[in-house]
Image 1 (cartoon, helix red, strand yellow):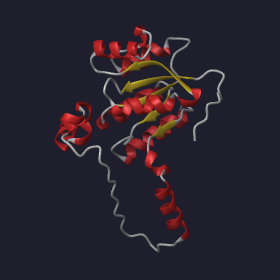
Image 2: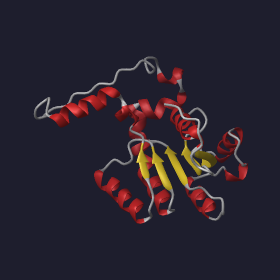
Image 3: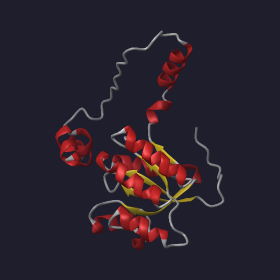
Length: 202
């Protein structure tokens, strides 16, 4: 459902870490977050390269002074501003999520993180504790949970229609990665190449 009404007098001042030029996930976050006027993108650390970050941010309509070279600089500098950010989206490679989430929560920012939020339950529980201590919201983008088939399966399990669940075998078929990823989109390399993901984690 689309709702064009405005619910906040002032939208949430919001930033993004990662999600720079060519990022499929970054675009998805920006597109969704700014619907209904609930969020306004005012700052970011979109790219590890400071010049690319600034160029991209300016092309999104941001003040070049609020396009930062790192998430640490973003959090520190925005904390000094009266109009500093209140929330941040994290759209970086998986191995960086825990570290950036923790820094954002410690800076008392609300967090929307791409999946997975962490690689371990212990790290996720730690982030949950820090969020509670700082009265912050932390959310993870598990959009597929809203699919009707997933909701139906949940209800069937809760009603006991399927008996005791011992094994779950799931598949997700799609066609947009059916060609060599380098030819489709170089920005997908870290997501779809196992070799590249292992390198990032080491």
